[in-house]
Length: 220
Ligand SMILES: Cc1cc2nc3c(=O)[nH]c(=O)nc-3n(C[C@H](O)[C@H](O)[C@H](O)COP(=O)(O)O)c2cc1C
Figure 1: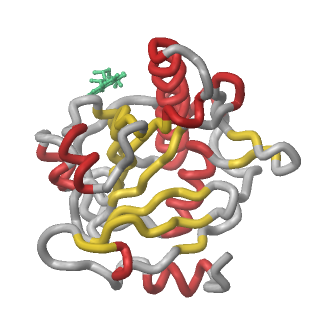
Figure 2: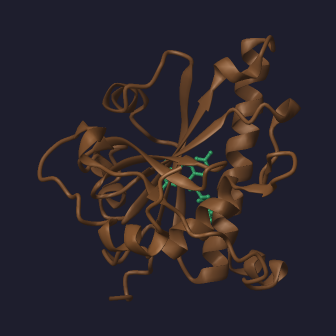
């Protein structure tokens, strides 16, 4: 694992912005994430009371500490002894990958290493789909199922199971955002073919959904 400490990575998190389109991941560095502090947050019922979709985002970037906690809530390892996650998956196949799309580039959340791995440099947020808020949110999460990890289930069962896993992760993110005063919206209307090409995905990888996250517009 990289020896860069999260604080140093936080400082350089936003230094790799490239004007224009996507390019190779060599322009980006892996970003170690903060270890989650799991005793924080609001009461679950209070977060559920405030869970909602919001489509307005401040351009203010999310600190790496917030990104770290959000990703752990989304799909982090919550039982290191077994490697199991904060969201369920059929037969524990853990078929989901969470990609983090920012103005700087696309990263893959490596939950076991607690690290963001560079995938593509450059800003592709506005290419995720047609709704304008996709290009305005400082972070767009992309949920991709790797059907190759799901063994010999039928294709029908694979897609159903991946959709359930995706929904579970999405709700984890909704609840974290409600707890932390962040805005978020799940987005099914995404350019699946375009993203597969931009992110060099394999044929067995299925783009499921996206989810925008950011501060409310009033936050500067
Ligand atoms: C499977 C699914 C797909 C969705 N796709 C979109 C979308 O493409 N664009 C959008 O603005 N909202 C999308 N949403 C958010 C819904 O519009 C939203 O959840 C719904 O209006 C209810 O509002 P609430 O989340 O505040 O309760 C989607 C939600 C789900 C569950």
